[in-house]
Image (cartoon, rainbow, N blue to C red; front, side):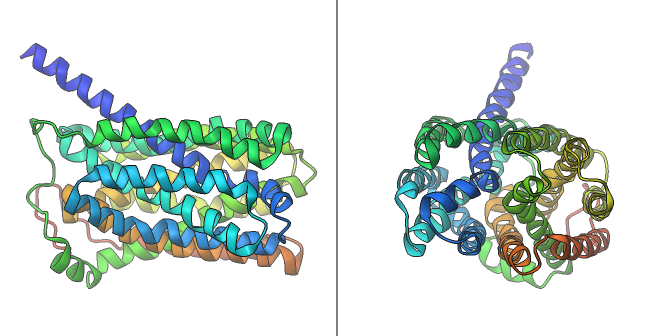
Length: 407
């Protein structure tokens, strides 16, 4: 019995590490487009507004492909989805430095890289891991994997800044293909078939994706999750695509901005791990409402505070604390309602709505700066939307863990 317990612990740790490494690398690339923005504009010769629009399209593509790859994984297994993701992301990164037109940059930065990241999404990773984990460990592993996105920011922000300074966009992208390629063995380890764990969570409520999806789209709970995640995407796109530019507009150097985002990444990990832990103890809708509610408070204080390196770093950290922490409760509510087997598909659709919000956040952020000279108006919009997201999250009717969800 003791040997079996040790083997189980080893398996949980190994799967959590594999999922965290994969998610960290793809999140690190996708969340650092703001760091790369100046290099992309210089390399391509395109305007700031044009590149912002391409980044906005990438937000849509990232969300759009997730239900597709989730359905592919449900039908054919997760290996084809993981392999496709690595190939798409590397292709876009290799060719992006040669892009000098809107069409070519749209292909690489707006389609290939986001599609590769979307193929290896949080939903697919947790949809792969959850059936292999004991039920009592799922919330904790979910928080750890989601927190790994902070590792990507913490590690890759200064690395990408240094690579851009040393050799431009080409060196930065080509060097980063190496860790992306190394994610494939870890992804295949997650996809490998194994025996059923002692407790397989959420097997009672795993409706087929077809009729179940139609029922989900008519469910108030599912609609509330979509509305909240739309505002989340809007808010997060502002942070990842425009906050570095805004910080530099305060007279703070590029290097200091990169290290501020390293702090953002570290605090993101803390917020995500805490979120995953709280989801195992409290109602997930309350956890979700708390993190959404923290955002308008942070935005309001950010807008009125003096803009020094210290205050900017503090508020960047606060943005990180609530940033990715909404993912574990949203994924948990989806898994509770529709089963781990369908998590990638159902969560993928909710996340697509998140990326629609991201499209408008990335695009309108660029327009706001170009037309008004500041980001104040778009931050005010994000403040109002985040408050509404907190309200609809608290309106979710979450069934007790022992009852069958009526989603």
